[in-house]
Length: 186
Image (cartoon, rainbow, N blue to C red; front, side, top):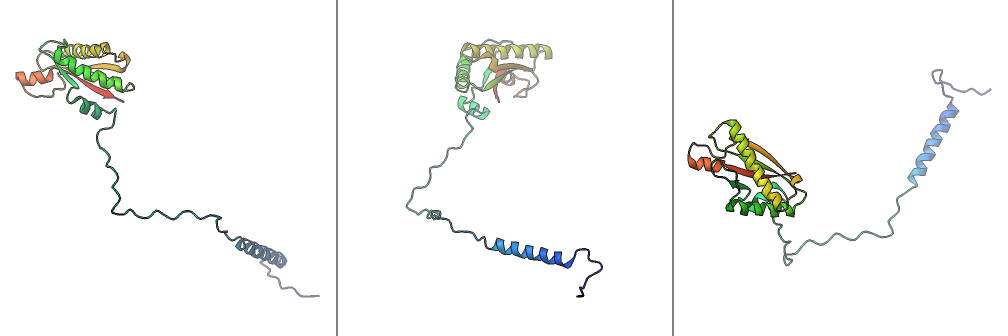
C-alpha cells in the first residue's frame, strides 16, 4: 500500500489543494492572454501652442450680473431712491423721472420682484413716522403700477425713522432721510 503523507492538522485532502492551485494557475494564464488591442483609429494630436502673430482673445466685460440689485442700482445711476418734503408722501416731477426709470428696468426683467422701503426723518413719534413711511412706500408702489409694473411683484415696508442714512439733527440730514428706496428681490 502506498504511503501518503498527510498533515493531521490539514482538513483539506492534498488532491483538492492541487486541483485548486491548478485552477488558479489556469485562470491567471487565461487573463494574461487578454491583452489590450490597439484602437482602429488614433485620436488627433493636441493643437499647437498659439504663436505671437495670433490676436489675443477679446476681454470679457466685467460688471454686475444682469437683473441683480447691483445692476438695478448701476442702471439707474442713483435713481433707486426718491425724496419727499416734510410730512409729505406725494410724487413730484423729480420722483416721476426716477420711478419711470425704475419701471423700465422692472419691465425689462419681468421675473424680478421689488420691495419699496418707506423712511422718515427723526422728528415725530415712532408711530407717526412708521405710518408716514408706509404712505411714502405705497405712493411709490402705486406710481410703478400705473406705469405697467404688476402689483403682485411689489411689496412695501416702512422703517419710519429707524434706518436713517444721514445722522444729524439738521435740515440737510432730515431731507436725506425722508425717502422711499426700491430694492430688488430674488
